[in-house]
Amino acid sequence: MSNIQTALLLMVVGMVTVFIILLIVIGLGKALIAFVNKFVPEEEAPAKKAQGPAPIPSNVLAAISAAVSVVTQGKGKVAKVEKI
Image (cartoon, rainbow, N blue to C red):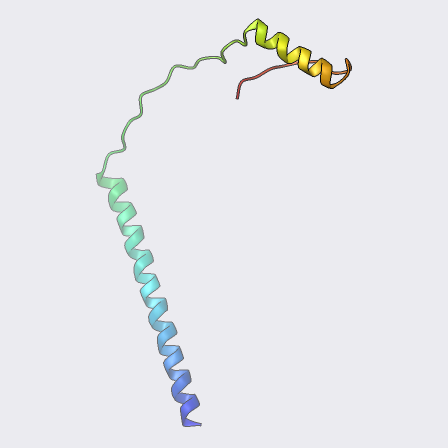
């Protein structure tokens, strides 16, 4: 019976120790984040000009339309082509 009590005591002490260490790690992490946000300035990215999508060349659009027509046996139609 004494061995079980000793084992349970060691288990509880170990779990409490791990819990306390995790709380310390979380606290230090939050403190580091607060420090960095307060004293280190954020780099400003240069603003990019808003550009519309580049137009699809007519020969590429014709090739896509022909391929869709062949695959769908004339039943399909190209409604919109976007470059992603």
